[in-house]
Image (cartoon, rainbow, N blue to C red; front, side, top):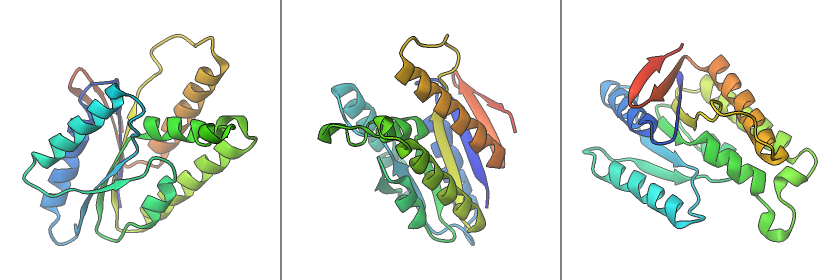
Amino acid sequence: MPLLFITGGVRSGKSHFAEKAATRYFQNEPLVAKRLIYIASGVAMDSEMAQRILRHQLDRQAQDITWHTIEAPYQIELAFNGLSDGDVVLWDCVTTWLTNAFYEGFESGTPCVERPGCLDKKLQALKEAVLTLLDKRVTLFVVSNELFDEPPYTSEEVELYRQMLGQLHQWFVSVAHEAYEINYGIVKKWK
């Protein structure tokens, strides 16, 4: 089934676009679509993120359709493995999940980014889970942030994050059936 990749800047309208597209697909495929699922990867580490999460929750609650929410800030493959044929899924978003992956284990002293092979294992598990979904009858909308319009950062860790995110975006587009970029509420279809 299709995978649709949606990216754009912060507050560009990409989540709104993805929600509308997933809802429309769900409503237009009554013989196939079984559940409308929102996989959320955000963690409220500060008040700004808590407000963003709340805004997204309220946006979904205001709709005339029921979203089933799965919180998956770390092991996204477990959320993907629990999906069933006919599910229409919106995952928001890759950038928060990758940030979580980088710093998972920080509270115990050694974040994943500092453990050899840790990030590679997480990325491999993600990719394998996505490819498994493509063989199922699951429609997946994947949202991410575009961070590549700025010059390289002086922080090696931030630059590593950007490079990994860029590679992950390229991979998603390579396996996606459609790819969109949202800027200022304007939608550009690239694939």
